Image (tube, rainbow, N blue to C red; front, side):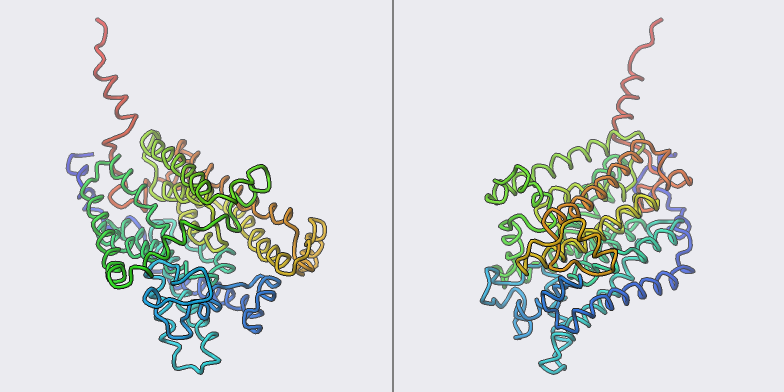
Length: 478
């Protein structure tokens, strides 16, 4: 590759359209299928909607959502503005989400004001669901675009996933998922500043997209794409500050609620620590400081391992591979792992490894956990022992919920089913990084369709290049 091809303007003669194939013919199909899945997800919530999301009904029918109850609990029904107005009756004094998510909640609260007082809560849920469905379509199309020539396959895997159907409307996560997918699509189109701006907005909606800066910078360093990395970081910082600064200046106490709340949370449902505290690590649940230390420390160790992998792999890892791995490294030791967090992983998982067997196994693990958490909470709410494994399987085979929910031991099985399938998928991605010939994307002749300026880039910094230089400097014996 020529010196010009090694600069930040590399491959300018190859348009993003040529590299990414033609998404346009598939867009109507992907849009329609995603809309149908989102409609099915909305219908799945209707048994609970008819009961105004009574908690017992939501756990029994596995159709819980935060959207409806938080409309009332976070003061939106009383006209309170997130971050600027506090509310009483809970340890949380302000809306505990990043600013862009709070702005989205406020927007929908304004939109439903014309409805009657008794109808506003359900209107708030329905309008939110409609907008989240639009974000789901955006996420699918952006992910398909970033996939390059495998756009249809990748888009279908996201659009038709059980995870999307079951978790789309639990919370507001699809806003950040769509923005993150758009950021990746912009990066793949070689527009790093725009990608950074979209990523900054995603971080303003949820914390987790901040993790993607690590893989982006690491791979830019390996490929010597310094200018692209700078534009990305500038765009990210600028967009994040644009959204956050006004609230930070005029509503500091409300703005920092998300960060103080996250720091002070204890072991939550879904976390591996919830399992470990009943298997020899009882101290974890009694010390938030120790919990934060263990979770953050484990993540930092895993992140360091991913950084080493980025520079020592025989071939530069594809961007979605590292993004997926760093997100898994964050989630596995996290003290909170809500059911809808699967949406964070979904686009990256299909881009990192668009193979069906492991993907299907992971989706089964997510389905098991999805029903497991609600049925376990049913037993906790009803203060019953819950069904054992035999009773749970018998109820499931009868297409019914276990009477009184499931026992904690059965819930632990569901928790481990998700944890281990995500871990297994990460291990397979690492194997693909170390053995590029087994990477389905690269086996088809592509390099890194989502990589943007990284696609087909030469290495500038890598262990292999350093070894080659050292060998070249060793004098040959005469």
